[in-house]
Image 1 (tube, each protein chain N blue to C red):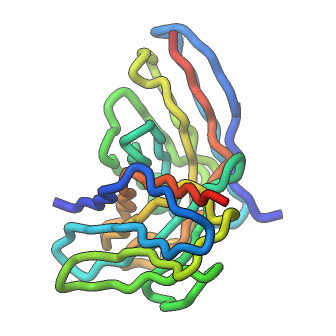
Image 2: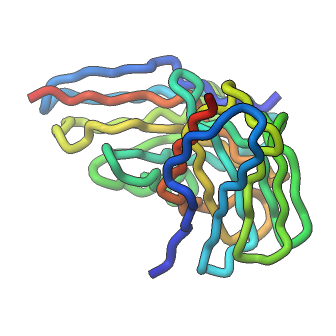
Length: 108
Length: 115
């Protein structure tokens, strides 16, 4: 079964601390994985995707097929990073499956 | 401006009264999808469409219908709404080039309350 799991509902850190938002997936094939972000009162938007292997707003995510994980990391959290983060998996049939979401709270 | 537009943005209705939430995109995207967002459950896919006249069930299709008669529109129909359909609904679209959905562009969301 295809599944995306984000084990933490809420992650609270202080400004300047490292951040790691966990994402594990279950998929029998080659997954395409994304991180989406929803800032307060804004639309959901793409943060990054594993194919691009880029760093956006200081965030990176590496696909680990052995551990079936796609954790989102940032070395130094900023207050403006506070938002809801969703990990998502795209199957080759067109389904796009989201995790439960993790709220990141960065305290001053 | 390239965007996905949903209407209404807010709606309070009563059990059993049919309603339609419209979704329109101006980017000529093949793929469109509906999601509901509930606390602790994240985003769950209701229905999706990979092109005109092609629709498929997502993970939570019960109680919903969709149609895709034109490329730009993908309305979500609740024939007989019930309180458990109270939720925040998102429409999204993307170009579909095979091998899976591409990056989604989301609408602003429609908050539906069924009394």
